[in-house]
Length: 65
Image (cartoon, rainbow, N blue to C red; front, side, top):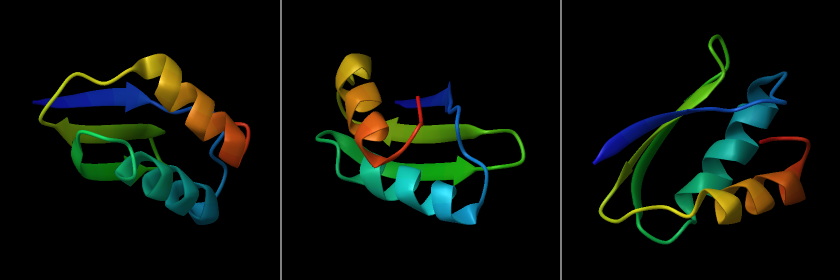
């Protein structure tokens, strides 16, 4: 299943790389695409994701939610 999520707090390509790397390490994630122009992440998974866990992981890397 593929879902799109709005990601706040990204201001540069370095932010995009941090967010993408963080999301790629989440259990159940198969593929991630992150873009800055319209700040979002498209996540392909093989199981449901825990959005609270994802937000906590992103907040550890910066001011991302």
